[in-house]
Image: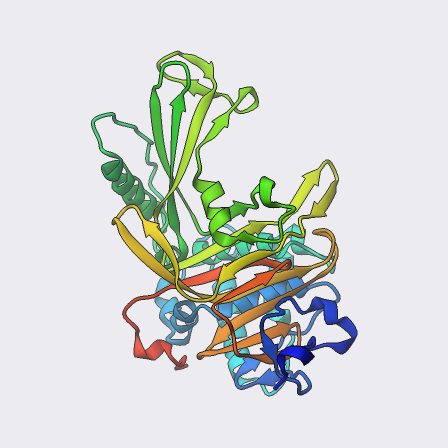
Length: 383
């Protein structure tokens, strides 16, 4: 094992790629398969896909869902794009990774995605977060228990409390979107707009499979940005100026408004996207700020239940490079109680993890809410 003074990258020729200086890695040569964790070959610039898939595999409930073949009962062959094929291909990939004696080529899954999704139909670098979002959305559609989605008209009643409005919105969401992805990863966010002229309020609830967090602008040049800072910025009240004016139903015209965002209903699996890229026309640049985030005991308030959820990290998608179209993606994942750093086919075990980690490369964080442990999740059992 490496000492604090002699830490080094899994790849000595690319030391700058290793994102976690607080974490010790195995000094032995990285391996293609390590204690059941399997590497994935890179087609030239498909590290974005590999890192995202490794993070998904680290979600125990999702992997167990496929391992126990429950997906067969819930396969939706009427989904618009993949007609159930994506879920079947992902199941096959999981089985291949479980049985592998070396790194594998995820060609079945990749060829299917290339066939149906044009933006990934090439060997060019892509955004791992966009791929992850796309994959989860389409996996949800392939496993949606709702075959024919009902039309539901949104209504807002001043007679309802926010809690009642939230419950109704969530129930309506589940009438159209009902899958294992929704069960695990969908969260609910409350948006309250207040007219600055007449103080009229409007409240809406929206659901999504991940949460995008901007880095606090005033802290971008500070060496100490925490995940809590990002959450606080996301939930702080902001003024919607003329460029983002809101139609006030009382004033009957576009008005400036105050917007307050709250995390309302929290999921079992919380996926956080750190917005590291700026876009201006066709150009983009990366925000290289160091973000500190906890590995264990990340506490957030679930407003729908007025309870505190305690989250532990299970996966991180990292990006090294100066912009979204270049660089390299890697993954840090928790599997069966052990941490691994994965760079395509190369896997190294990680040791002596601290309570929190700082990184300029962490891009997507995946947390799992603590709860009553299912013994079957401690080790995935394939049948």
